[in-house]
Amino acid sequence: MRHEIRFSGLGGQGIITAAVILGRAAALYTESFVVQTQSYGPEARGGASASAVIISDEPIYYPKVMNPKLYVIMSEAAFQKYGRDAPSDAVMLIDPGYVRSRPSCRCIEVPATNAAKEQLGKPVFANVIMLGGLLEAADIISYEALEHAVLDSVPKGTEEKNKTALSIGREIVRRQL
Image (tube, rainbow, N blue to C red; front, side, top):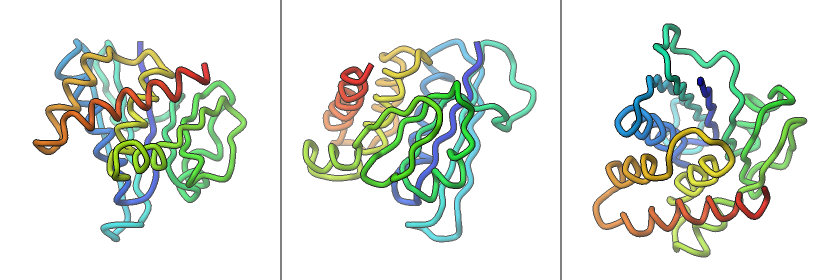
C-alpha cells in the first residue's frame, strides 16, 4: 500500500511540522518506508508553505509526490496552488476559516484553527487537529503510532493539549463520515 499526502498552507500554520510528525509516526512506529519533502517561501510567517509525505510498504525510489490522493489544505492560496487540480478520487481536508474554494473531489471541512482557539486557547494546535482528522479520514497508520510521534515532537508541557488536539480532529471528521 502506498499513500501520497500533500500538506499546504501558510508559514506559521505548522504545515511542515504536521508532515514531519506523520512521517515520523510511519517511519518509527510502523514498518513503513517514508519520504518527507518540504518547500516554503522566504518569509518566516505568512509565505507559502507545502510539504509532502509518501508512506509505503515497499521501498520508495523517487522522493517526489506524483499522484497525491490525500490533501490537507489550510489556506486559500495553498488551495489555488496545490489543491485546485486534485483528482476526483482524492480526499481533501480543508480549514473552512481560511479556504473559500471547494474541490471537485471529496472535501471534508475541519475548522482546525477555530477549534484550536476555542477549545485549546491557541491556534498553534490547528496542525495537530488536522492530523487527527486526516487519520480518521484515511487509514494510513494507527492512532497509537501517530500519538507517539506527536508526543515525541511537541514541546514539553504541551503533551496533553496535543493529545486533545488529535482527538478533536478525529471527532470533527468522524461526525462527517
